[in-house]
Length: 155
Image 1 (cartoon, helix red, strand yellow):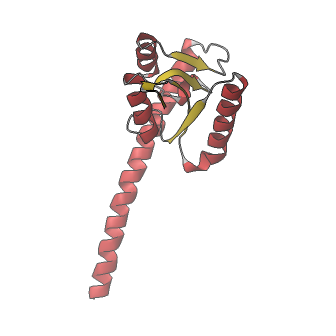
Image 2: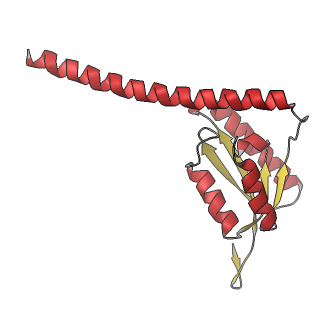
């Protein structure tokens, strides 16, 4: 936003889910962010993303990081801490602190134990690598199937 040559800083709500199957959860996150920001009387925008929390190449995350670095926002609102990133969120929170950006996490919940956090981290890593293996093997299978079809058509 620009007002008389001056950039007004914005409030950004960030929502993320892993897959298209979780579209309803994404809508719930967006609604929660909207209700919270509106109840505070803030003007805001919502950035939504689709992808694993270990994927740093999501369009919305890139846009958010650019806005943070360019000091275009004054407040970042999340429904849960892990909606931003599973690994690396603390780094982004530190950058926000350096840029005087308030980070608000609506659902803080109870502090997880070390063991609970470790289990979540390991599960996330396994999920990401399993998905990569699945994509890779399905790509190989499509190639093999295409070869077989071509081979059968030539016979």
